[in-house]
Structures are given as structure tokens and as C-alpha cells.
Length: 91
Ligand SMILES: [Zn+2]
Image (spheres, rainbow, N blue to C red):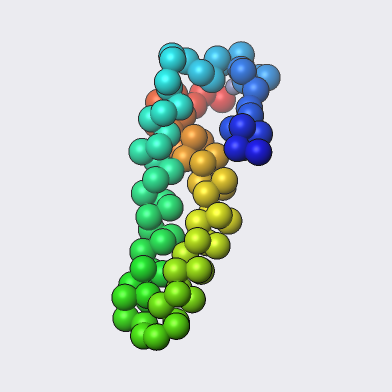
């Protein structure tokens, strides 16, 4: 399932840009997707810190759910941001 999430064409159908420019190129996209996931999770973390009783576990559950929903999107958004930082767009 996770392999499917990262499936993408080898090159651009329009300009033939080879996406995997160097070995491990996409590892750099961790730097662009990770902060977005953190931003999504921090509000839940604070909510859990100031909650009491069972609601603490409620917020942690929401945190996990939010992560599972956001992660696949952020993975791809992170790659998009990463390649935009590294390749200048020309029309
Ligand atoms: Zn292109």
C-alpha cells in the first residue's frame, strides 16, 4: 500500500524531465513534508496537554487519525514542494 502511494512516472510527459535526478533525491522531500505534518499534529498535542481525564486519549486518537489522513497527502505535497525548490519551472 505504501509503495503505491509513492508511485509516479519516471519522467515528465511534457518536457522529459527525469524526476529521480540523483539517487536518494526524494529523501530530501522529508524536509518539506515533515514540517507540514508537525503543524497538523501540534494543535492536537496541545489540546491533549490541557485536557483532563479520558479526553487526553480522545485527542491522541484524533492525532493518529489526522496523521493517517494527512500523511499520504503530505508525502506527495512534500515531493511537489521539494521538486519546485530544486527545478526551475519554465513554460
Ligand atoms: Zn515537464
